[in-house]
Length: 53
Image (cartoon, rainbow, N blue to C red; front, top):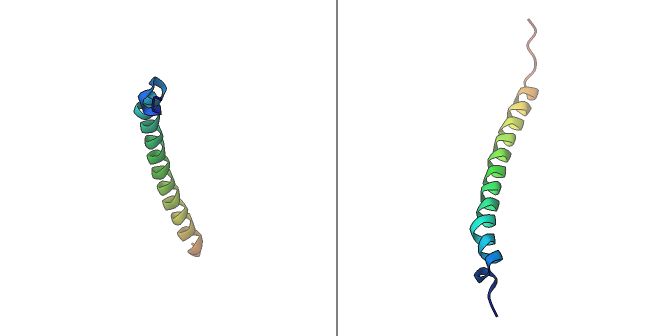
């Protein structure tokens, strides 16, 4: 019996789909990190009392 990675579909999966998934996960991780930084900045600004002029 042929192993999945030896089939055309399997080769496409490992050569095309898996790298795309990995790139997408890296992008999601970067965006989550940026979102967390933005939320932290917002929280810091909300904790500071507003100064009256």
